[in-house]
Figure 1: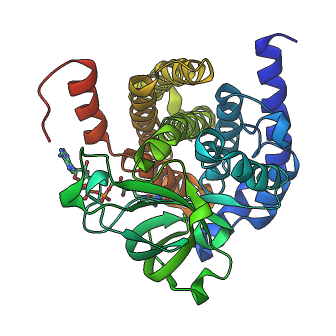
Figure 2: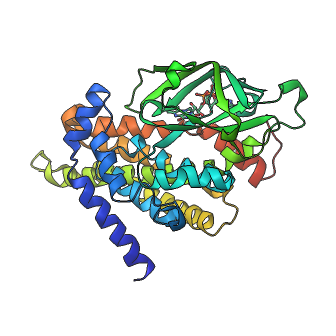
Figure 3: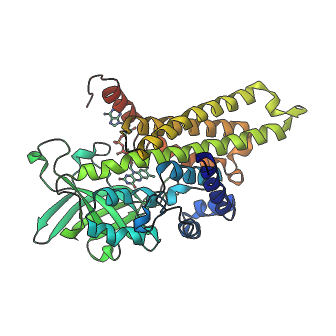
Length: 385
Ligand SMILES: Cc1cc2nc3c(=O)[nH]c(=O)nc-3n(C[C@H](O)[C@H](O)[C@H](O)COP(=O)(O)OP(=O)(O)OC[C@H]3O[C@@H](n4cnc5c(N)ncnc54)[C@H](O)[C@@H]3O)c2cc1C
């Protein structure tokens, strides 16, 4: 089986699963802020959510290229992979930085779908994108760390057993570099609300299950430190490239979903006695959206292949996320316009998908921060902050 057949097989299997969860399923969840428990169970059982976990830990041992195909197909089918995508990549921090005991304890259970590791606690309300200034503090005391502080927009925390948390372990005045003094932890969320963690869901524009977290003398055993103490930024950074590339693939799926819908409608909808797609004012924006999407997809593929080859891919991962998020937004806006008033109707699903894909210009990193990265690290222009 060559590379193309192999990916085509994965895509076909994912499409078959998605078929049982039609767009009505996602619309109904969206309307009440529900979680797609049945869908997540089905995609977990198929092995696709654990596809990046090596076979030695019970996963499928596939690469990011294959994982991208999985998420793209879920998006393209009209689903919302944001409900579960982190189960794929958060484990990367454990895989690359965990001790042998941590890997053995968590990875086989994550691969089997017995443990949900799909929360990543980084963002804070007062520091936002300026991650290395975060304030949540984990004080070492005896054999444990005592955590106090606040996080915001932490997704799926109510639907996860474990979370990778980034907290400060050395006072900011004593740090030796911007990234020094932060540590990563594996937090067991089961029963955590009785142990000093308050979880407050955020009422948001999309059904992403994001929450505010308040830590009040919350204890983490020292064996849950992930990687070296005070060097935890590296632990989360490694996972961020994978996250950006996978989310870019979701955006490509969204963009292709929108273009599928646009072209179908433009062929079928007749106004002034002809299909609206016969008007170039309708067809050209769709063609433009298609071209943008295909260009962005090449960057996503390049970034994923670099990642799989263990090559540096920071620039490509960032560009892939930015270009794919732009392409999906423009394809979505065009799709809405093509549908005229019907695009606004919830029945047509377009407004829901447009809300969902809009997130990716903001999270997991906003466009300005990507442009700033390219300006400084790729093009060698002066650092702006
Ligand atoms: C639905 C949702 C789910 C999320 N899930 C998670 C999660 O699971 N885990 C997690 O840790 N975080 C999560 N986030 C947080 C997300 O990563 C942040 O919202 C994002 O990184 C932006 O941070 P901020 O909201 O604090 O914006 P800010 O940092 O306040 O920035 C606001 C705006 O100003 C711009 N800006 C700021 N500084 C500069 C500058 N120097 N130059 C140019 N422009 C600048 C930004 O680009 C942005 O547009 C989620 C967010 C949302 C909305």
